[in-house]
Amino acid sequence: MNWVFNIKLNVKPVFPFLAHSGVYEGPCRVGKPEDLSPEEERRRAKMMYKEFCREVRENLPSNAEMLEPAFIEWSEDWVVPEEELDKVKGDIGETDLFLVARTSSPQYPSISLAHKFGKPVAMVGQVSSIDVAAYLRARGLEGYSPIDFEDLRRLISLLWVRKAVRNSRVLIVTEENPLPVGVVSSIMNLENVKRRFGLDYRCIPSREIFEEMDEVSSSVEHRERAEAITDNLIENAEAVHMKRDYVLSSVIFYLAAKSLMNKYRCNAFVIPCFEICAKRIPEKKKVTFCLAHSLLKDEGFPSACEGDLNVLLSMMLLMYVSGKSAYMGNSYVIDKERNVMALHHDVPGLKMKGFNEPNLPYEVRSFTYGGWGATIRYDFSRDNGETVTMARFDPKAERLLIVKGEIVGCGGFDEVGCKLRAHIKVSDIVDLFHKEADFGHHLAMVYGDYTNEIKELSKIMGFEIVEA
Image (tube, rainbow, N blue to C red):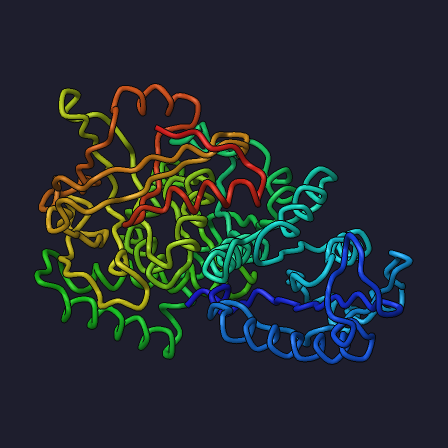
């Protein structure tokens, strides 16, 4: 499984305590004398601190970890002492989010933490939380004001996606031409993507992956693993329409891809099709890349056809947000009057309903008339009426096209070639088609409606949303 799913978003609880110098009332403070003494005030603060820590611990989602809480004191000179701020320094390198308690006048401590350490600050509740968020955002810093713990969990999940992307690295298999023949709308500047999103990459020549196929084939250990995966695929399929040896060839390619991903510490994969096909290497090896894409995605590794980096990055966001394997394909109009489009590629996953859900039913069919090139076939019509979310970045990776649709059928299930397609009804097919002209022709797709999550994520990661 993709290691990023083991990453935690580290939350640092901070409790700011405003220590008053004596007993007094006024515009900012009212109470009985016995309640306003410094001693009683401190006693109550310690109790509230303990309760705050308990609430945070009990309400964090599974993809978050609570760091050691900090109790910060300041006083009526309205300056938060440096030594108090430094109480958070012990694990500052691990901290992803300061979660500040909504105590009496918590604004100054909150903004002081943000200025000194440059970390996002969140505060659950109202009034002071939005005051802090507005101050920080106006200055290019990150401030969040979740209304309750449910809203906080949602925020943490989105911040986790950003962290997961920053901890991801794409293995890019290349040919001589850096611009994919089949997808000239692919991302123009990977260094810009790395700078903005933190997504790293490693490029290798295509010959390396085919040499790795030979290594897998000649290794007794790897060969046995390939045989076992092949047998498992065949035994669990509802039908298999090709020879076992040809399924094995595609499995060996999948293991070669995984081996190189491990070697180069990558957790996403993309490879061009047309350029390598023209060299006759796939025909010689009796392999297409479709099965590898399906199997990798089912393990949580984004994996895209035709060297398409736009759809890979879009797929990464959708998979990390949803916890599901993604589908991708060419999009085109099949019924203009009914607003029905097709999404068309032989790369469905068995975990499209969730990584922790049972495998979907499937058949195995060859990509070629020669009988080789294993592909997974899933009948999308089983899911008629289900909602899906589709997305694609533009060539500059500055805007993300998102569209919600409904599965209404399936095509190409039992045909040879790149023929499998999901039929999807959208709100306005003509509008989608014209907007795609700014983005390109592949879309990534996951089951479920994640449009709101993606919109919120766009604000966190810094890209524009275009809806169709």
